[in-house]
Image 1 (cartoon, rainbow, N blue to C red):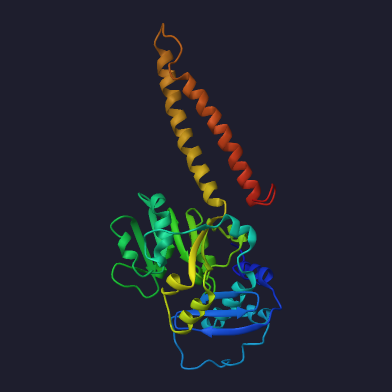
Image 2 (cartoon, one colour; image 1 turned 120 degrees about the vertical axis):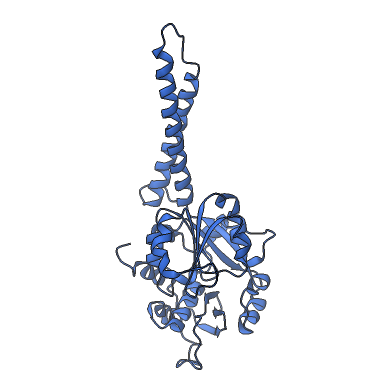
Length: 322
């Protein structure tokens, strides 16, 4: 993207609200912003401080007052700004209708990886951030983990410049938005299926314009338990108490599938054409026995081309909105 601040402009425009903030909780792992109309979350910074200069002064501000903090370079301010933005956005009804609730056998914080697992086998997968327990997939997937504070087997985050352009699937934490790494990560992953995931994810379909194929965010199922767990220092425990993962396909995932299928069918059609040419080279032969298959491939390619055009128009604003 040419303007790295573009996504932050979008977030502030979409979340702008004069709702009064009733409470801000700054937990060890999560930051929560609560109003009478909704609650938003963001991951708290990994760096801790003994005190914050604005402690005790956030309640009674409007969401609009704090949403601009998303632009701050101070990570604690940016986390509050992100939580305020998510409180303002909520989960729009249109996206909620298309959201798939994840209910599988994986630990709740790994439900997203379990959901996508059938599509990930045999693919080059990169994950930005080490999710607790993700090593369970190390022997199953071609998996690279990028981590700011790398452990055994991880790569340091500068390796993203080399890894993400070669990956076929990329999972990026929503906390990349407040920490300002999202614009670059999204640019590097532009040729991959990009999944933006975690409680920090804002529920905005417009994120497809930044290369996001899937939103794997969370919805609150028990606000009382969520607030208590955040306040008491809960990390992944929020997934087992107050939150549940949901996934929405923003459309580019389907575009990538259609594009890949067209490429495969074109290659197969070329091989059949070579067979047909070889068949008719020999004298006295009748109709090429796979002629009907060639005609079927032509019909399929035509239908896929129309499908891709519909998706392209919807994504770029020149067709019916998806």
